[in-house]
Image 1 (cartoon, rainbow, N blue to C red):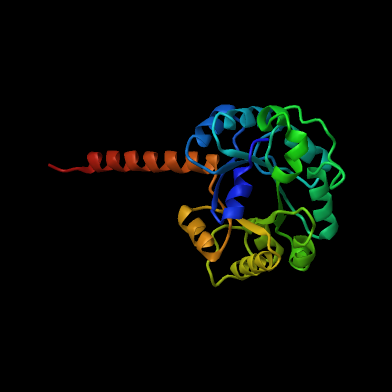
Image 2 (image 1 turned 180 degrees about the horizontal axis):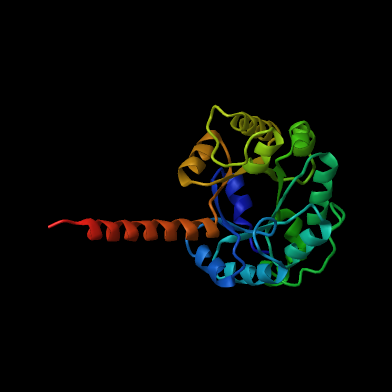
Length: 263
């Protein structure tokens, strides 16, 4: 079976730089995959991506050596199993708040006897290899999102769930959970940042990996320096918006200067 380089990097202490896809397009997924990411996550929760879109995006990512992941829209076994069958090599599961929910998530990712995933990897065999069924339990990455008030009260119970590889922090929902405005790249003196560091400390204590969503490369680097193992930087939609906005503003400013230039 194809090796999951995310897990390999984790074990070797090498940071994973993760891209994020919200645009439902195989072509944009292919473009993003050519930019040197270690992994790319298809966002099926807050992006506008449905299953047929995700399938074509996974095919596009497969033209590179980037590892494909998906964030599902809920901790729902059917959706988790289906996107794994399509060839996702990792799952980020939102709103995991307690041990039972963590166990349900992990179980959906694992074949019996460790879990209850149904066998039918229609594209997983094509991407992973003909021995996919034998090794999938060892290669699939399982990251539970910590972003609710309840989760903050159950960190150790969640993080000691057998088979869970790590956690992933969603700063926006985490902000809402503790009564702050949802945003990313939190300042170090904020309540959310303190909670983020608390979550990271618990992950280290429980010997699992930690990832976090960021808006800027500079902030993501700070999170790596703090000890995170995986950082997501921006998204395809944000990169497109930011690039276009910068060019338009630059050109309009040039035009304005030319119009006001005196003799």
